Amino acid sequence: MMEKALSIFSKVILYTILIIFTVLAIYPIIWLFIQSFKSTQSYLTTNKLALPVEWFFDNYPFVWTHGGFSVFIVNSVIYTLITVFFVVLLANMAGFGFAKINFKISKWLHGLFIIGILLTIQSILIPLFLMVNSVGLLNTRLGILIPYIGLGLPMAVYLCTDFVKHIPDELLESARIDGAGYLRTFISIVFPMCAPVSVTLAIITFTGTWNEFILMNLLTSGDRLKSIPAAVGRFAGSLGTDYGRLFAALSISLIPILIFYMIFRNQITKGVTAGAVKG
Amino acid sequence: MTIKGEKKFSYAVLVLPAVLIYLVVVAFPTIFSIMLSLTDYNGGKIFGADNLHFVGFRSYEWMLFNDPSKAFYTALRNNMYIVAVSVFGQIPLGFILAYILTRKLIKRGGGFFQTMIFLPNVISPVIIGVLFKNFVYNRDSVYMEIVRFFDPSAEFTLNNTPMIPVLVVILWMFTGFYMIIFLANMQRIDPSIIEAARIDGASESRVLWHIILPAMTNVIVTSSILAISGSLRTFDLIYVMTSGGPAGQTRVLSIYMYEQAFQGSANYPMANAISTVMVLISIALIIITRAVGNIFNDKEV
Image (cartoon, rainbow over all chains, first blue to last red; front, side):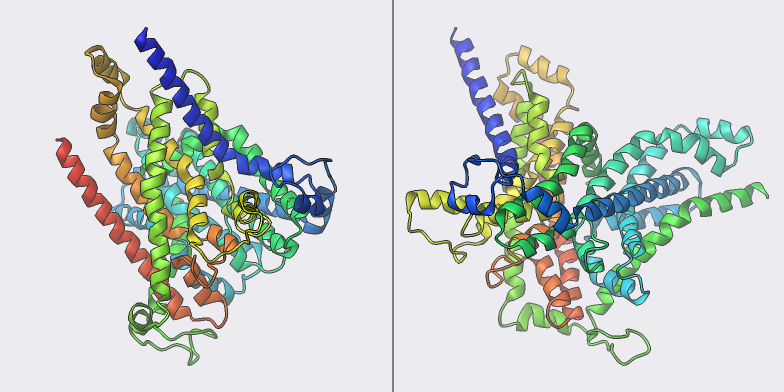
């Protein structure tokens, strides 16, 4: 009897802890969406935690047309998809080379990529800026994509090499006996077999690229080439204390990644763990 | 083509694209950055003109010893606050949440709680920064609304402990990240070991202390390393939320570096000196963390 009462009591406590953390995690976001349906005037004059007295929808059309969000969303999609494609493909190729084709240099090259995992973007920011500038790629899509792909590679190559190592040698040997060269083996056996690690990589790279800010901010000026985070930073600045519209702009920026998260939440958490375990 | 030729050719085709891009985008700029920190280069053509001379450790000396404003140390201190919040805040909280979720101490809704608590991690720090600036960090914020409820005449001020709101947001953002890491690793513990211990009469707290915690030592070390390198990387959030202000009080090393390079007159050597020191600090902290982890590991054996 005593034990049972205790276990109900502890359950109540545990649920309370989880509910508190959940509410803390999502309340600011819910608050943002709710406040985006107030006009700036009513946000300033009513309780800032309350629901709108009358729901005000005009912030969204204004922000969509004046903010140029259709351009930013398209830009974000372009940068992200191209970066994901190349990071996944190049990392698979290099991973196969490092793991299964015997050359002494592999150890060194692979080690070079591992060092890259430890580096921070800040430690190469200025040289990258100077280099992109001096070859005339400032304010071009290519000038952003090449750094994005390069920065995605260290972790990607690490994970792919690790994955390919676990493919049995006999499988690859039998393909070679059947007359397939290394490239053929890669295309028809290794790359398809790497699908699980490719999905993980695609997802890590997707969220990383989608949210990238510092390089985008530095390597592009004006709004034409900017992705969502860099653009919304600028636009938020120009809106100042026009809160209703500001909150609508933030809400629009959030919607794509929230949808992506809801669809791929399990793969995202799996990808995070795979990327983190390397230590 | 000979077999050997085919092997070499295939290897080059497979490996070279990644290696070349990596060398250009990451490896070369890293060396370039260290070189620049030892020069007096402040813009203009780098080669062929008279814009660049090696001056040794002049920038480092200024930054570490001669700068009267001690801006470097203020930024470093703020970074250490972030490291502390990560290691002593996010990691323990993440551990507790993961423990509750894995031990199935609750029956329903585990997946839901997990998804929601992790959610802040997928949002761009820029958006979070703007959001929280308006949530806690200006005169029309929710925070001020609550303060005014108790004291209607309260005025918004940034001068007292401006780092605290930043640290709270950082705690808010990343706790879910460590929860996910602990969750994945706790699920790998063989459930039959825990079952056997429970049947032998071990209490839940003994299971936690003698089975789960020892199994997590390495994960705690790995998480601490991630927290340290992540903390030193922090840029977007603070750049948007406070821009390092007021008067540099929330400046971290990355912001300090950015200001030196891209705001006002460019001081590239100084900025590169800051980023080089950041990498060195990161490596030093990681080595220390590993060593501390090893001490705990030895105790287990």
